[in-house]
Image 1 (cartoon, rainbow, N blue to C red):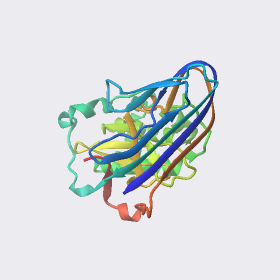
Image 2: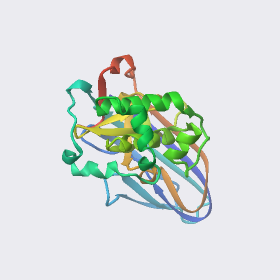
Image 3: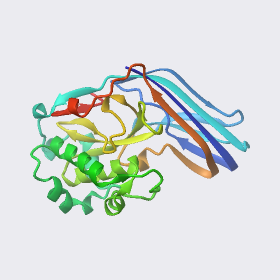
Image 4: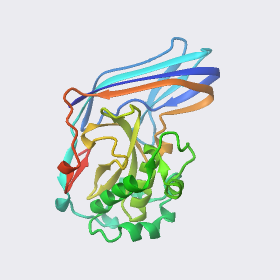
Length: 280
Protein backbone atom coordinates (compact mmCIF):
# COMPACT_ATOMS: atom_id res chain seq x y z
CA UNK A 1 0.00 0.00 0.00
CA UNK A 2 1.42 3.45 -0.89
CA UNK A 3 1.83 5.96 1.94
CA UNK A 4 2.02 9.67 1.20
CA UNK A 5 4.45 11.41 3.53
CA UNK A 6 5.20 15.08 3.96
CA UNK A 7 7.21 16.90 6.61
CA UNK A 8 7.88 20.59 7.20
CA UNK A 9 10.26 22.06 9.79
CA UNK A 10 10.67 25.80 10.43
CA UNK A 11 13.58 27.13 12.48
CA UNK A 12 14.81 30.46 13.71
CA UNK A 13 18.60 30.57 13.35
CA UNK A 14 20.50 32.73 15.87
CA UNK A 15 23.98 31.96 14.58
CA UNK A 16 25.42 29.98 11.71
CA UNK A 17 24.75 26.34 12.58
CA UNK A 18 25.09 22.79 11.33
CA UNK A 19 22.32 20.19 11.54
CA UNK A 20 22.27 16.43 11.12
CA UNK A 21 18.82 15.44 9.89
CA UNK A 22 17.23 12.00 9.75
CA UNK A 23 13.97 12.52 7.85
CA UNK A 24 14.41 10.35 4.78
CA UNK A 25 12.61 7.03 4.54
CA UNK A 26 14.86 4.04 3.96
CA UNK A 27 14.85 2.12 0.70
CA UNK A 28 14.77 -1.57 1.68
CA UNK A 29 13.66 -4.94 0.35
CA UNK A 30 10.13 -4.32 1.66
CA UNK A 31 10.03 -0.53 1.38
CA UNK A 32 10.09 1.16 -2.03
CA UNK A 33 10.34 4.93 -2.52
CA UNK A 34 9.18 7.16 -5.35
CA UNK A 35 8.66 10.87 -6.02
CA UNK A 36 11.05 11.82 -3.22
CA UNK A 37 11.66 15.56 -2.75
CA UNK A 38 13.77 17.44 -0.20
CA UNK A 39 14.12 21.24 -0.10
CA UNK A 40 15.80 23.81 2.14
CA UNK A 41 15.78 27.59 2.23
CA UNK A 42 17.94 29.17 -0.47
CA UNK A 43 21.34 30.15 0.89
CA UNK A 44 21.71 27.02 3.00
CA UNK A 45 23.67 24.01 1.77
CA UNK A 46 23.49 20.30 2.45
CA UNK A 47 24.99 16.91 1.66
CA UNK A 48 23.36 13.48 1.75
CA UNK A 49 25.01 10.31 3.04
CA UNK A 50 24.52 7.11 5.03
CA UNK A 51 26.60 6.72 8.18
CA UNK A 52 29.50 4.30 7.97
CA UNK A 53 27.96 2.23 10.78
CA UNK A 54 24.63 1.53 9.06
CA UNK A 55 22.14 2.29 6.32
CA UNK A 56 20.34 5.20 7.99
CA UNK A 57 20.15 8.18 5.65
CA UNK A 58 21.40 11.54 6.91
CA UNK A 59 21.52 15.12 5.69
CA UNK A 60 24.26 17.43 6.95
CA UNK A 61 22.97 20.98 6.59
CA UNK A 62 24.81 24.28 6.89
CA UNK A 63 22.43 27.17 7.58
CA UNK A 64 24.79 29.75 6.09
CA UNK A 65 23.85 33.30 7.08
CA UNK A 66 20.09 32.66 7.06
CA UNK A 67 18.10 33.78 10.09
CA UNK A 68 15.15 31.58 9.15
CA UNK A 69 15.23 28.06 7.79
CA UNK A 70 12.48 26.03 6.12
CA UNK A 71 13.01 22.31 5.49
CA UNK A 72 10.51 20.18 3.56
CA UNK A 73 10.49 16.50 2.70
CA UNK A 74 7.95 14.44 0.80
CA UNK A 75 7.86 10.91 -0.59
CA UNK A 76 5.50 8.14 -1.57
CA UNK A 77 6.40 4.82 0.03
CA UNK A 78 5.16 1.33 -0.80
CA UNK A 79 5.58 -1.15 2.05
CA UNK A 80 5.13 -4.90 2.18
CA UNK A 81 5.03 -6.02 5.83
CA UNK A 82 4.74 -9.71 6.58
CA UNK A 83 3.11 -11.75 9.35
CA UNK A 84 4.06 -15.05 10.94
CA UNK A 85 2.24 -17.42 13.23
CA UNK A 86 4.11 -17.28 16.52
CA UNK A 87 3.97 -21.05 17.03
CA UNK A 88 5.76 -21.52 13.68
CA UNK A 89 8.70 -19.27 14.65
CA UNK A 90 11.59 -21.23 16.10
CA UNK A 91 13.61 -19.97 19.02
CA UNK A 92 17.34 -19.59 18.41
CA UNK A 93 19.95 -19.69 21.15
CA UNK A 94 22.33 -16.80 21.63
CA UNK A 95 25.04 -19.06 20.20
CA UNK A 96 23.19 -19.12 16.86
CA UNK A 97 21.94 -15.55 16.60
CA UNK A 98 23.15 -13.68 13.50
CA UNK A 99 26.28 -11.68 14.28
CA UNK A 100 24.65 -8.44 13.16
CA UNK A 101 22.02 -8.87 15.89
CA UNK A 102 24.44 -9.55 18.75
CA UNK A 103 25.16 -5.85 19.55
CA UNK A 104 21.45 -5.40 20.22
CA UNK A 105 21.78 -7.68 23.28
CA UNK A 106 23.94 -5.14 25.13
CA UNK A 107 22.84 -2.28 27.39
CA UNK A 108 22.97 1.10 25.69
CA UNK A 109 22.78 4.75 26.72
CA UNK A 110 19.00 4.88 27.09
CA UNK A 111 18.28 1.17 27.58
CA UNK A 112 19.94 -0.02 30.80
CA UNK A 113 18.93 -3.65 30.47
CA UNK A 114 21.53 -4.68 33.06
CA UNK A 115 19.47 -2.83 35.70
CA UNK A 116 16.19 -4.55 34.78
CA UNK A 117 17.27 -8.21 34.81
CA UNK A 118 15.45 -9.31 37.97
CA UNK A 119 12.25 -7.40 37.26
CA UNK A 120 12.14 -8.64 33.65
CA UNK A 121 12.29 -12.27 34.76
CA UNK A 122 9.75 -11.69 37.52
CA UNK A 123 7.25 -10.12 35.10
CA UNK A 124 7.92 -12.02 31.87
CA UNK A 125 10.13 -15.01 32.60
CA UNK A 126 7.20 -17.43 32.77
CA UNK A 127 6.25 -16.93 29.10
CA UNK A 128 7.53 -19.87 27.05
CA UNK A 129 8.39 -18.11 23.77
CA UNK A 130 10.50 -14.97 23.16
CA UNK A 131 7.78 -13.42 21.02
CA UNK A 132 5.23 -14.08 23.74
CA UNK A 133 7.61 -12.31 26.12
CA UNK A 134 8.01 -9.35 23.74
CA UNK A 135 4.23 -9.08 23.29
CA UNK A 136 3.72 -9.24 27.07
CA UNK A 137 6.35 -6.53 27.52
CA UNK A 138 4.55 -4.30 25.02
CA UNK A 139 1.21 -4.87 26.75
CA UNK A 140 2.68 -4.27 30.21
CA UNK A 141 4.16 -0.93 29.16
CA UNK A 142 0.85 0.16 27.64
CA UNK A 143 -1.01 -0.77 30.81
CA UNK A 144 1.48 0.60 33.33
CA UNK A 145 3.05 3.69 31.76
CA UNK A 146 0.99 6.80 30.99
CA UNK A 147 1.46 8.39 27.57
CA UNK A 148 1.79 12.13 28.26
CA UNK A 149 3.22 14.40 25.52
CA UNK A 150 5.94 16.70 26.82
CA UNK A 151 6.43 14.72 30.03
CA UNK A 152 10.05 13.72 29.36
CA UNK A 153 13.16 15.05 27.65
CA UNK A 154 16.20 13.93 25.70
CA UNK A 155 17.91 12.69 28.88
CA UNK A 156 15.10 10.34 29.96
CA UNK A 157 16.16 6.69 30.02
CA UNK A 158 14.29 3.40 30.24
CA UNK A 159 15.04 3.22 33.97
CA UNK A 160 13.61 6.73 34.42
CA UNK A 161 10.45 5.73 32.56
CA UNK A 162 10.07 2.61 34.68
CA UNK A 163 10.43 4.69 37.85
CA UNK A 164 8.21 7.61 36.83
CA UNK A 165 5.66 5.56 34.84
CA UNK A 166 5.15 8.33 32.27
CA UNK A 167 6.57 9.08 28.85
CA UNK A 168 6.14 9.37 25.08
CA UNK A 169 6.73 6.89 22.25
CA UNK A 170 10.52 7.27 22.53
CA UNK A 171 10.39 6.29 26.20
CA UNK A 172 7.96 3.41 25.62
CA UNK A 173 10.31 2.01 22.96
CA UNK A 174 13.36 2.34 25.21
CA UNK A 175 11.67 0.47 28.03
CA UNK A 176 10.55 -2.30 25.66
CA UNK A 177 14.08 -2.66 24.33
CA UNK A 178 15.60 -2.75 27.82
CA UNK A 179 13.19 -5.45 29.02
CA UNK A 180 13.83 -7.58 25.91
CA UNK A 181 17.61 -7.34 26.23
CA UNK A 182 17.34 -8.25 29.93
CA UNK A 183 15.70 -11.50 28.74
CA UNK A 184 18.47 -12.13 26.15
CA UNK A 185 16.23 -11.08 23.24
CA UNK A 186 18.05 -8.74 20.80
CA UNK A 187 16.01 -5.56 20.48
CA UNK A 188 16.44 -2.37 18.50
CA UNK A 189 14.89 1.08 18.13
CA UNK A 190 12.62 1.91 15.18
CA UNK A 191 11.97 5.50 14.14
CA UNK A 192 9.55 6.29 11.37
CA UNK A 193 6.26 7.60 10.12
CA UNK A 194 2.92 6.12 11.19
CA UNK A 195 -0.17 6.29 8.99
CA UNK A 196 -3.02 8.41 10.36
CA UNK A 197 -1.41 8.72 13.79
CA UNK A 198 -3.01 11.28 16.09
CA UNK A 199 -1.60 13.72 16.81
CA UNK A 200 0.60 13.57 13.68
CA UNK A 201 4.29 13.26 14.56
CA UNK A 202 7.36 11.14 14.04
CA UNK A 203 6.96 7.81 15.80
CA UNK A 204 9.10 5.30 17.70
CA UNK A 205 8.56 1.57 18.28
CA UNK A 206 10.82 -1.37 19.07
CA UNK A 207 11.74 -4.54 17.20
CA UNK A 208 12.63 -7.88 18.78
CA UNK A 209 14.81 -10.43 16.99
CA UNK A 210 13.48 -14.00 17.22
CA UNK A 211 14.48 -16.76 14.83
CA UNK A 212 16.86 -14.24 13.22
CA UNK A 213 13.96 -12.07 12.05
CA UNK A 214 12.88 -8.72 13.47
CA UNK A 215 9.29 -8.29 14.70
CA UNK A 216 7.72 -4.90 15.41
CA UNK A 217 5.93 -3.84 18.61
CA UNK A 218 4.31 -0.52 19.52
CA UNK A 219 3.65 -0.23 23.27
CA UNK A 220 1.80 3.08 22.75
CA UNK A 221 -0.79 1.43 20.45
CA UNK A 222 -0.90 4.68 18.48
CA UNK A 223 0.07 2.94 15.24
CA UNK A 224 -0.83 -0.20 13.32
CA UNK A 225 2.06 -2.50 12.36
CA UNK A 226 1.00 -2.42 8.70
CA UNK A 227 1.00 1.39 8.72
CA UNK A 228 4.64 2.05 9.58
CA UNK A 229 7.35 3.51 7.34
CA UNK A 230 10.95 3.16 8.52
CA UNK A 231 13.25 6.16 8.74
CA UNK A 232 16.04 4.68 10.83
CA UNK A 233 17.10 1.81 13.07
CA UNK A 234 19.42 1.94 16.07
CA UNK A 235 20.42 0.73 19.51
CA UNK A 236 18.28 3.54 20.95
CA UNK A 237 17.24 7.11 20.11
CA UNK A 238 20.85 8.29 20.20
CA UNK A 239 21.35 6.51 16.85
CA UNK A 240 18.21 7.86 15.20
CA UNK A 241 17.73 11.48 16.25
CA UNK A 242 15.52 13.39 13.82
CA UNK A 243 17.50 16.62 14.18
CA UNK A 244 20.83 17.13 15.94
CA UNK A 245 21.92 20.76 16.10
CA UNK A 246 25.44 22.11 16.41
CA UNK A 247 24.97 25.84 16.95
CA UNK A 248 22.02 27.96 18.00
CA UNK A 249 18.59 27.35 16.45
CA UNK A 250 14.99 27.10 17.64
CA UNK A 251 12.21 24.97 16.16
CA UNK A 252 9.30 27.35 15.49
CA UNK A 253 6.89 24.83 13.97
CA UNK A 254 6.72 21.27 12.69
CA UNK A 255 4.17 19.36 10.65
CA UNK A 256 4.28 15.65 9.84
CA UNK A 257 1.77 13.80 7.68
CA UNK A 258 1.53 10.13 6.71
CA UNK A 259 -1.64 9.08 4.93
CA UNK A 260 -2.86 6.36 2.59
CA UNK A 261 -5.99 5.91 0.52
CA UNK A 262 -8.34 3.32 2.03
CA UNK A 263 -5.85 2.28 4.70
CA UNK A 264 -7.13 -0.63 6.82
CA UNK A 265 -5.10 -0.92 10.02
CA UNK A 266 -4.57 -4.38 11.45
CA UNK A 267 -6.47 -4.59 14.72
CA UNK A 268 -5.46 -6.46 17.86
CA UNK A 269 -7.99 -9.23 17.20
CA UNK A 270 -6.40 -9.85 13.78
CA UNK A 271 -2.96 -10.14 15.37
CA UNK A 272 -3.77 -12.78 17.99
CA UNK A 273 -1.12 -15.49 17.73
CA UNK A 274 0.77 -13.54 15.04
CA UNK A 275 3.83 -11.33 14.84
CA UNK A 276 4.54 -8.70 12.17
CA UNK A 277 7.89 -8.02 10.53
CA UNK A 278 8.61 -5.06 8.29
CA UNK A 279 11.57 -6.65 6.52
CA UNK A 280 12.04 -10.18 5.14
